[in-house]
Figure 1 (cartoon, helix red, strand yellow):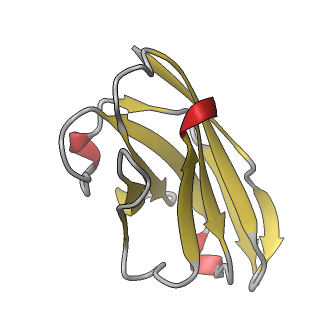
Figure 2 (cartoon, rainbow, N blue to C red; figure 1 turned 45 degrees about the vertical axis):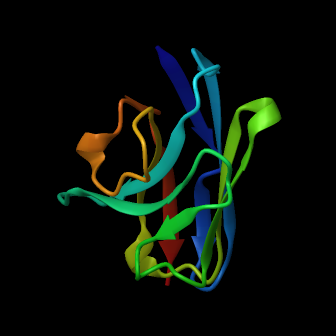
Figure 3 (cartoon, helix red, strand yellow; figure 1 turned 180 degrees about the horizontal axis):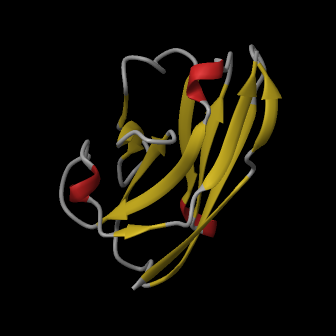
Length: 124
C-alpha cells in the first residue's frame, strides 16, 4: 500500500501560480511513476501530467504544456506540480497518483494508488 497526501491547493487569480505537493508513504521502496490528474465538478478525471522513475521522463497534457512542470524528490518521496499562468477553466480538484507498472500512464485506470485531492480555484 502507498499513501498519498496532496497539499498546496487554494484560491488564485487568473494568471497566477500555485505549487502542489504530494507526499508518499508506505511501500515506496518500489520504483513508481507519479501522475497528476484533475477533476472539475460534473466532469471526468483527466490527465494533467506524469513523471517517470528517474524524473528524466515527463509527459503533459497539451492544455498545460509550457505552463505546468512536474518534479520529484525521490529522497523524500515527494512530488510537485508547479502551475503557472492558471486559467479559470482549470478550477478542479487535483489528484496525485502512483503506478508501479512500466512506462508513464495517461489514464486514471493505470494508477494503483490515489491521494485525497486538493482543491484549486482560479478566479477570473
